[in-house]
Image (cartoon, rainbow, N blue to C red; front, side, top):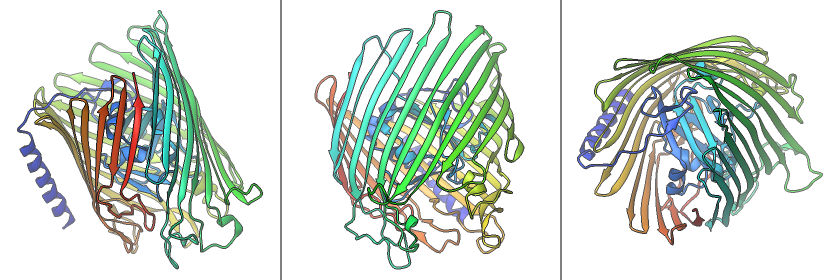
Length: 623
C-alpha cells in the first residue's frame, strides 16, 4: 500500500511539474563544486545528487540558522529539541544522524563521542556556501559518509577594494543578532574577517508531563534561551609560479538553557545549561609542478567541547565531553588529455577524547588511501573509486563506488550509481562507562541510485530514485544491556526538484518520498525508522519589484514516529513563511520575515516545542 501511495503522489508531482513548464525562465548559474568527487566540477557535470546553498540564497531566504537552511532540502529530515541552540539532528536519505560526514573548509568536524555535528552551534553569518552531496561517499572520504557529505565554506574576500559589512536585527522571543566584517583582495590575494553574535530568550523547550517527555520540573512559562558569539578569519595568496595557499579559522562559543530531567534524581542529572565550543582551523596548499599534475595538501584541527552544569553556580556538579581531531590529506590529480582525470590520495585522522567520564580508551587513529578515475567517452561519463581504511580500533575496511552518466541530448542526462560505505562505532558506543561495547563492528551499507536531470528555456529539473541497505546497525541490546550490531534497514526514496519562472516570479520546489523500513528481526520488523517524515514538500517563491523583493516559503512534512516501536506518532504539519526586502540605497537593505504565519503547532521530536508565529527584521550593509 505504501509503495502505491508513493507512486501515486510521484505521478501527481510530475503532472503538476509538466503544467508549470509552460512559461520561460532564466538559466541559473552553474556553480563549481568540490565535495562530490574531491575535485572541481560544475553541478551539471556531477554524477551525484547535489544541492548548493550560496550566500545569496542565505540572505534571500533570511535564514537565521543552519537548521533553517536545511529544512525542506531534498532528502533531508531535521529534528530539533526545543528551539535555537538545542540539539539538532540531520537525517540524510533516511540514514542515521551520525551517517553524515561534515566538513568545514575541507576539515572534518564533529564529536568523536556522539558521532554527530552540533549544527545548532554553527553561525550562519560566517557561511559563504554549503555543498550537500546525497548518497554514499565512503569510497572517497571513509567512515560516516553513508547518507552523504555536507561541506560548509566560511566567507572569503575578493575584489580589489577593502569592504566592510554590517548587520543588526531583532524580533520575537527577545532575539537580537548582529555581525560586522571586513574583506578584500586583489588578483593574487584575498582575506575576510568576521565577528557575529546572537542572543534570544527563547521559549519553553520541552512540554513534559508525569511520566512522559523530558519530565520537566519547570513551568510552561519557562523560557530556555541561547547566546552565541563567533568569529572567523580566512586568507589566501596565489604566487606567480602558481603556488596557492589558503588558511582558515572559525570559533563558535554558545550557551544554551534546557529543561532538567525529572526522572533521575542523582545530582549530575539535574543539569539545565550547557556551554558549547566549536573550533576549526586549517590550511590548504595547491601546486602544479606540471600541467598534467596538481597537488593538494590539506591539514587542520577541529575541536568540539560541551559542558553541562546547573544554572551558573561555579561549584555545582558538571559533566564535560571534549573531543579533538587532527587531519591531514594529500591529493594528487593527474590529467590524461581533456577527458580523463585520475585522483590518488591519502588521509590521516587522529581523534582524542577528554571527559569527566572515564572512557577505557581515549584516542584512535585512521589511515585511508583511495583512487578515483573520471572519464568522458563520447556522450558517456564514468566515475570509479576505491578506498582502503585501516583503523586502530576495528582494523581494515574496503569501500567502492561507480557512477555512469549519459547525455541523451544537450539538455537531458541520465545517471546511475552504486556505492558501498561504512560507519565506525563512536567512543560512546565503544567505551562509555557502564554502557559501551568494545566488540562492536562498523555499520555497513550498499546503495543504488538512478536519476535524470535536464535544463531548458523554462527552467531546470531533476528526478532521482535510490535504495540503501544497511547491515550491522548499532542499537541497544537489552539482553546484554549494551549496544550491539543487531539491526538492519532498507531505505527507498524518490527526490524531485524543479526550478522555473512564471511572469517574473522565481519558483524553486522539491518533493521527497521516503520509505525507511526497519528490517531487524523481532517486534519492530517492518516498522518505519524513527523521526523520518515519509513525505516532504518545499516551495520557495520570489520576485523583484524595483527596490522591493517579496518572497514566501511553503513547507509540508508528513507524519513520523518518535520511537522504534512506532507507538508514538508525530503529526504532519504545514508551515508558511513570508519575507520582504527593501533596498534603502545602493549598499543598505532592510529585511523582514514572518515565520510560521498561521502559528502551526508541530514537533520534530516528541514533547519538544518548535517556534510559533514570530517576526524578525534586519538592517544590512553590504557594498
